Image 1 (tube, helix red, strand yellow):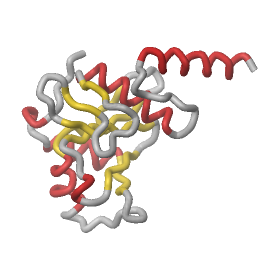
Image 2: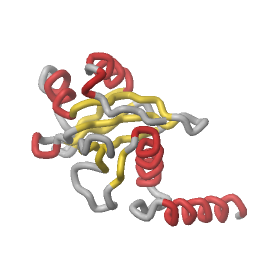
Image 3: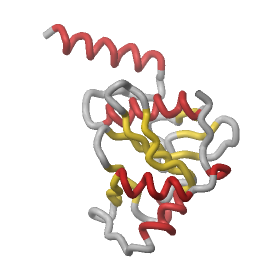
Image 4: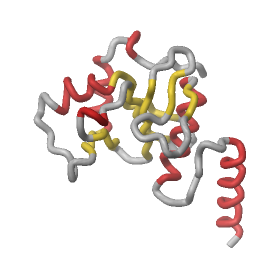
Length: 152
């Protein structure tokens, strides 16, 4: 099928342009696409695929960032204090390829102002599921100087 071949060619082109990402045609594809879009919009240097806690660092400040992206109305946040990222940037990828920022700020902000305050239960002690609405409300409370700055 012609469309599948085009999609495979596109992923090959993306792998060549961004060698730190695999762009595999599975659930990771959305994450890889989101990480690349966020890295370009916010000036983030991406780590290699096997980085555990953070996906990259802000070039201007060196702050480490975990990026979560989705086409849905929720985002995952890691379970456990040892897994809480320094900075957490969650976005929705819109149909036109633009990003909708859901949350941009310190990971501890999410833990202190939402997860602990509501005594949320994680899924299998691996992650919390946070809705788009919750993340957007939390994002409004993060002071501007505590956000990763957009460069584009």
